[in-house]
Picture 1 (spheres, helix red, strand yellow):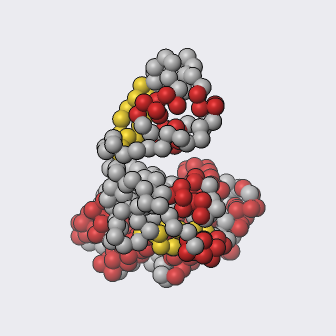
Picture 2 (tube, helix red, strand yellow; picture 1 turned 135 degrees about the vertical axis):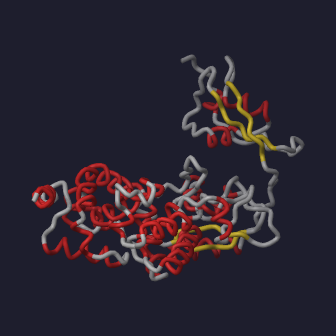
Picture 3 (cartoon, one colour; picture 1 turned 180 degrees about the vertical axis):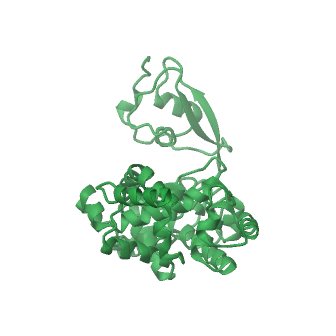
Length: 383
């Protein structure tokens, strides 16, 4: 009797403005999401799941809306690849839960990228990781790798929701949990008392489902921002071959893009040059620009640049220093100091720590005739 009353109260709570609505329309949508992941529709009445949704609704609503607004150019790319590979669209929310779609995201265990791959797993899936590039930051390649991995897990365990659990805790732990529980039923595996799976994994799949329910609730999206209804519009890119050992800044000029915009599309490059491989590597360009860029590349001969990998030095700013004097002393450019330290203006402070990327081969000549604005001579200011 007590449990029935509790369930009734929870359902009523879920009907308020902040919660997921249980009208026939919303129930149908949510049941379909569960079926897409091989979960029984009856899981919608799971009391622990209902309580989790209600208690975390505000937090997940904010995370979803902020992510959709900030990364509206990324979500369509992932969605299109998922559709092409016949993978449930709900796996987009796995990426959101993993990294918030932050391409440069690095976990405390050194997992990198939108899909949070550890280095060994990524390399097993064919992603290149070396001093020159880290393809875990390549949105397209890493998404295909994640799909390959999820398909492998689905083949191993037979159901998509089990693939999600294994993605988080590992296939070994999931096999042990199923063996101990003598069941692969989701409710059984997520039992908070038996603790067949780690708490992180139990919360992981609930977060994904909550995000998916919210994102497919048009009433919720309109209540937040009607523009969010258009977040899945196409934003395609094209992979274009690039020569080895050429400057990314020069490629950006050819593409008629700012360097920062170019890097947003190509975060997998570790440095400001293409790898010195014998074979051509690649860059991504917005599809709308691709024809013009391919034509421009065919008509220009890009100069080879020094591809010596720089080492990192921490420099503490002293009185009398300026960006220009520090750059000249270490034979690097002002722009590189500003880029690596995310300095927008030209002011620096006494005792400020700067990361300097210095070529190991100090004989490599660096152009000192660069056009440096007079503002770059600005002296440090005291705090």
